[in-house]
Image 1: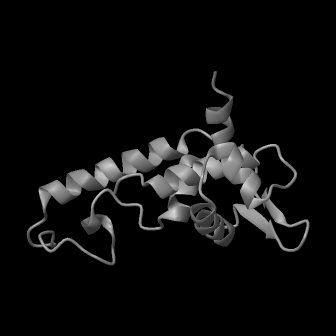
Image 2: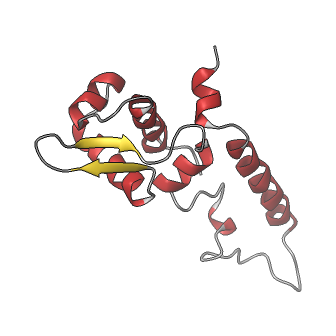
Length: 134
């Protein structure tokens, strides 16, 4: 797993919405230098994860459904990429063929620990903590 451009841009979308009542997609794109098609794709995923709320109509747009002091990088990244694993064999749906109860894969076991550490680091600060850092 690499942190994708889409995940990075999702944080930028949230940064644009932070402290705002409601922004249109065009306003978000202007503030964060994003293209509208990409922003729509990201907003759809963030909306599905209940991180943002969308409004239709003439005065439509988007607002945060959860505040930045409640959100972490892990929340955003996993909303964009639900299979947030450093390597495919960490996913229970794609188990490691080299890791069995008879012959455990020592590399797999180490990577499980690395995965836990990474997730912990992504959860340690809220987005508000990150945005407020000078």
